Image (cartoon, rainbow, N blue to C red; front, side, top):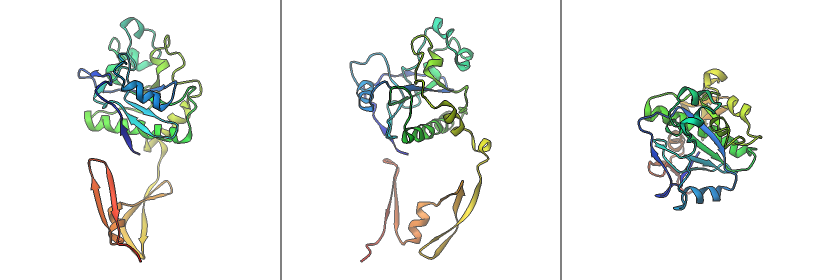
Length: 239
């Protein structure tokens, strides 16, 4: 999936002060994706921010890099004691913003659309992979480390991300490959009558083949742009 960068010089952030992200906090925007974009990039917003936002159509916007602290889950030392999330109590008295990554979901009551849910699952896994890549640490995608804003701040945000947020379905989708016992096998792939030896991989009934291998079999050129993260396959014109 594609992540569209939306943050600007007005997007609020601070240093993590050496803290590694340990948890993902889910939020509901209470408005549209457009209003979310406008607020998180407004010079008049001096109070909040988030790392990511997901629209109802499944589009992902990023406002801050994971390495920066968003202003999304902040608590005073006194209010930390009121948090119901185990991870918040374990890390007390540290400000939760220091070790959390925040995802906003476009909507009102937490009822995610199918594209939005799919994007959210993917984004949770992407965040965990990025934490591993950047910090060399595991961010577990379980009920302790994937939480809602209501578990962080039950006084001011008792309903965020909404009563219809699909928690059980999300946790089921975030299970590791070992937990899900995902079956991975090699798959024979044939392009234009030519077999691509050992190139195909079968995962849960879906075949994955490297684009470069397909391009080569078609006599095409494959170009990778690392800046835009775009792969372009160019074939000869067929008359």
